[in-house]
Length: 185
Length: 180
Image (cartoon, rainbow over all chains, first blue to last red; front, side, top):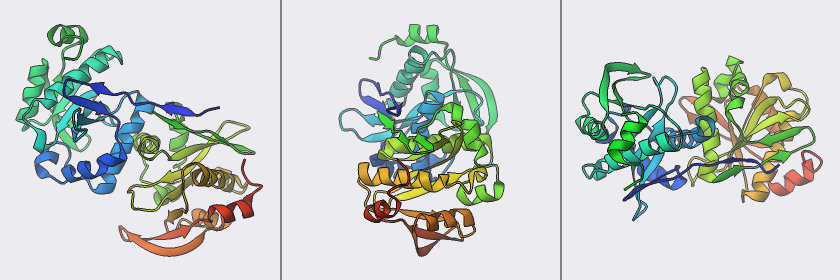
């Protein structure tokens, strides 16, 4: 017996590489979790140990669920600029495509670029037939990303574990691919 | 890509995990008193998150927790293995076993084999275990493994005991016949 192999795919876009979490991400990720301007819509502050566990959990969920939340990095420099991708922890209404780019890198279209690639991946590679995004009703920039993706607001103020969010429903695969194409651009 | 290795001992198999392990993993925490010493797992979902984190640790460090199964039955009886949250902290050996298997030497067999693996394959030079002061079963196991009480570290108002495990050389001298 040679052991159980746990593989985490990578997703590449024009300027981004999404991948599994690495120990070297811990510093930057922890620093961003301290920032109220980043953590306010994603459950608030997490300490260093919690952040470590979150990264481990996201990696391991690929082995258990077949998907997991990923590190989002700049392809050119390797810099960690946020997190995103498929996620469905306990208490979630259904599998979600999430995105959250660190404050220093917002406003450059990375969230849209990342989320588009993630939807292509879950529809094209994982066989998802639908996907939602949970968005805080005060989070204007995220709602604009959802709108650009073609998603529509489905339900207001849904309680999800410790927080309340709106459910946005993404286009189903066929319509999504018609709008955004199948291949990454 | 990360491969969680397989270690075969006389009576046990240490290996990775899949989703089929979730229920028996959750059952490891059914003794609430014991569970309160080793983790915060109270619900099936917390068990899922914990299990995911144990697997994901392998990606982060190249070592992590093994599932421990009885060879004769295939039954999951616990887990043990390494963790290290920060690069500047010590390598830790963690272990959790179902109360039902006590008294057969399974836990020692598993932990010694895992420790041997980390010493020989992962470059560990020393290892500690941090144990809740009321967790008498885990403290007893640490003693059986030859670990030495070192100090107390207070966390969230609890004085956790730090036990230092035998070095690779002494472990092999003392427990050469245990495990693989």
